[in-house]
Length: 161
Image 1 (cartoon, helix red, strand yellow):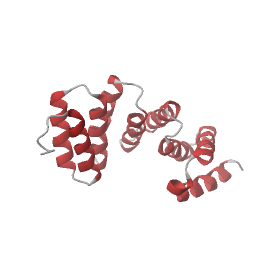
Image 2 (spheres, helix red, strand yellow):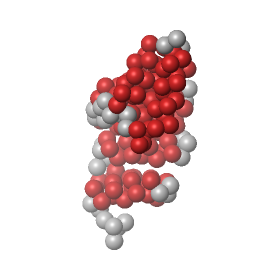
Image 3 (cartoon, helix red, strand yellow):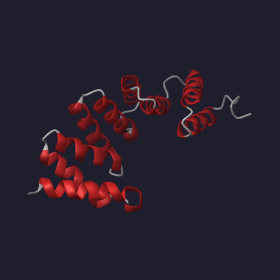
Image 4 (cartoon, helix red, strand yellow):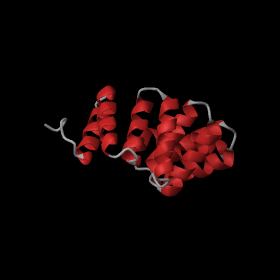
């Protein structure tokens, strides 16, 4: 009965469940059904963008995430995901800016801080990398980010030499 529901919240939840389960076609179909109810919903666009990232279609993800941000520029998950899509489409400068924006909107965007630190270092932007890595190390929860924290500490040590 849930799959036949026209309730927007139900469709969003179902789409997320499909996406998390790796059932991307069903997730897209569910989110598209929800978009027929509310075509401009930025969270739907964000979720569609994330599904496209998971499907390894970064250009499509980038376009959807830009639409989500155009509808609501205060979505840190959209900014973080846009950073991933931009990085995967070889727009390193755009990716760094998107991750920076995500972390400004929500300091708990630990993935954005981590990506920002690693990619800024890779791009030779050492001060930007050090700043992001310090924030990541100081705030990211150990249970979820233990190995990443270790990598961040090692990279920060190298950058500070």
